[in-house]
View (cartoon, helix red, strand yellow):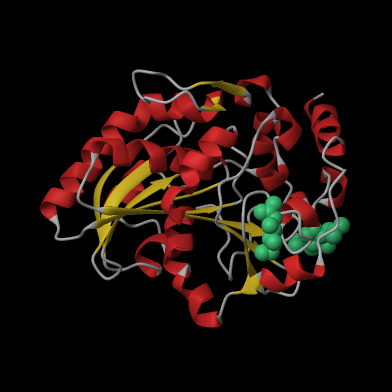
Length: 293
Ligand SMILES: *[C@@H]1O[C@H](CO)[C@@H](O)[C@H](O)[C@H]1NC(C)=O
Ligand SMILES: *[C@@H]1O[C@H](CO)[C@@H](O)[C@H](O)[C@H]1NC(C)=O
């Protein structure tokens, strides 16, 4: 049933305009140095799948001390069931607090994004002062863990001399990180924020996507023909913020201007419906990094 709904959703997004030549020319490829700069964050996103005990001890193996040996964990939590795992700590080499959220495997995220629980609902006015809409399931995780994560970020900023907060996550973890990216700046001032997420589904309506685009602090990296980034369909009212980077079949990383760019060099154009997508691209590799603990 969920699969059938997904096909219907995706078929409705079939009618896309062909990209013009000038559109293609304005899409730029990242340099190899720019691609490499994402790698530590990709490992932080992968470590989001590891148990809270192992991220707090920073002994989860390759994705923890192997990739980012200088990390100082501050707090971790979640049960991997109702609340995705999360951890907060500081990377002084990168000069930032890291907030990482666990995601889900491809089959789970596909049933989530085609489930009515993902559909738009009003933001909780006690947490968010706007009228934007976004996915109910991601909002529920934020309500359960948001205050603990906020407290952990404040602790990290008070203990270490860093002035930046970076939110990372893959899949559902990316959706939660995107909500963090509008939630945490409401409560923390005097620092800069950036959000780096992988295999991000569409999380909210146009107003939410615009809000998350302010300042261009979000980068969402989509791998090849991953189908999660094209769900839920735009015809249901969902949109992406700016900041897409699309990994091509060639391995090039292309920066896509605007929101939901319909060029075939970007996810929305390259994967016009889920029949042309490939679920196994969801977990990566993202420059060699596979998501998962
Ligand atoms: C997609 O990128 C092209 C090239 O920069 C740009 O002209 C076009 O407006 C973008 N499309 C959207 C929907 O933002
Ligand atoms: C889907 O992606 C996987 C991993 O990249 C690849 O091995 C497989 O051939 C792809 N399937 C199709 C139908 O393209």
